[in-house]
Every structure is written in C-alpha cells, then in structure tokens.
Length: 376
Image (cartoon, rainbow, N blue to C red; front, side, top):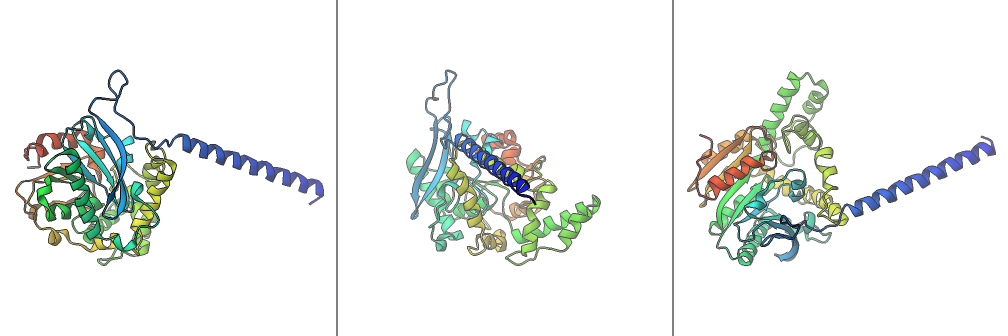
C-alpha cells in the first residue's frame, strides 16, 4: 500500500472513530435526558398535584440494609397493597409504563424492590444475607413499616412468580398482618414445572416442524435436580417467549419486551437502570443459590395451609410457573376462603396482560372477602 493509500485509510479510520464517539456521546446524552429519575405525580384536571395523592420513590432501612420502593396512590387513605416482585432480582414497577395496571386508582400500591434488586442493589450487600429466610423476613419488615406509616391494622399482600414463593411464606408465618394473599403466577414445585414446560415445548415444536429448536431442546433437557443444566438454562427464556408461554402471551423476545423498554423508564436514573440489571445478574447467580433453592422447594409441602383468604390469578398460557401445577396446589391448599381465576389470554403476568379483569377481581372479590368471580 502506497503512502497515499495509507494516508487515506488513516483519514477514514479517524473519521469513523470521531463519528462513533459522537454517536456514543449523543446516545449517552439522550439516555440521561430520558432518565430524570423522579416519580411522576398524579395531576388533577387543572394540572395541579391531585389532592391526597402520593407518588414517591424512597429508600428505608430494612433489616440492616437500605431498600427502595415506589409508592403510588391517587388517595393515600385507600387500602395498602404490597407487591412482591419476581426474579429473583427483577423489579416490575417499570413495566407499568407499557402495561398500566390502574391499581393506584383504588389502592396505595407499594412496588418494593427487594434486597439486591433495582433501587435496593449495592455492591457490598453481604452475600450471606441473600437467603429465602432473609427475604421472608424482609417482606414482614416492609409490611410492618407500611402498617405503621399508613395507620392500617393490616395490608393486602400480592406476590408474583418468585415473589409468590417468598410472600406466601410470609403470609403463613404472620397471617395477622394481612387481609388476604393474592398470587400472580404462583410457584408450586418449580423443578416439576420445568418438566411440564419442556414437554409442552417439544410437542409444539414437533407440530410446527421447527427442527432447529427441537434439536436444541432435545440436546438440553431439564433435570429434576437443582441446579438445572447450564445448556437448558441458556435456552429457557428463548423457547418460552418464542412460544408465548413466558412473561406475557404476546411477548416474543426478552430483549425487545423487557431489556430495551427498561432503559426507556423515566422514573429511574441512569445508574438505577444499570443497577436494575446488575441486581438481576447478582440475584440470579448460582453462588447465591436463591434460584436453585426455589427450584427444589415443593410449596405443597412448604406451605400446605394459610390462615387468610387466598386468591390465585393465573394465566392459562403460563408455563413459566405451570398453570396446571398451580391449580393442583390451589386445590389442596387449606385456607378460610379461596378463589382461583383463570386468565384465558395471559401467560405469566395476568396483572399486566389483562389488567381490567385483574382489577375487577380485586375490587369485587378480594376487597369484599368473596370468591363470587372465581372459576366454577
């Protein structure tokens, strides 16, 4: 290459480097501008903050570490609903930007972000505190804080997926703190659920003649022991979302449906968005064993009865936490009042997928200690 060509090549490389740097700076500036990190207030018809409403993002000391939460309510005198998110390590309030629930119209909703997750993530959390027992204790501590702050004798407890695993144990331990327990995608026996999902996927891919996914699944079957094989874990999210049996029935990609939208959430700062994913990776790490412990726990044996009313809201297409196993658990779970509600158009997140029906159940049945709308 002549010196002329080398000079031209260096010039092209320099131009490209400057262009990429400029693009990076522009994207960074856009991300910062899109991440003010302030909770949006509720406004009245005149654009003023709605009287009696509450919209805040706070961190409070819970069992030795500061933990964060969003509290949203159009009337702070409404019943308190504590939402215990899934994962482990995956807060869900940010999903309401794409999937509004309207819970805040009728409840003071507390979107707590658990130890090691999102607002509650920091790099020096003692790993020995990342245990199921600690998370149950944290749930009870957050509950007592809310009872004291809002002046109620009891609150409502809602657990989703991993959150159902720890919150049902909290309700069993101290039922006097709760009006009722509401499960969204209830964990039953997750190792068995993985088997049910795997067999369903094999059958679907055979019908669809998808040989590529069949080969991948057949080479990486799940076991009935924890941890699950690494090869199976690597394709789990892919096949569940590809078949519409994952987070939502209509979500086909974790990247497009979860990862990218999380960066568009305006009530997180940039660092809080980074910590959302740092916390997810940390909480799910094999060395902590949270996911492995949950996998191996048979909840039909762990919590065979509750002393509060119980409501299971479950998507018919849910194989993340298998619908059939949740129904079997519900049938043998002893409680003073029970209601099972099938969501025909939902997978793992009916509270987000069919929010109007979920809200109707909460208002008509849960708040009135009834099961009139339950499956017959």
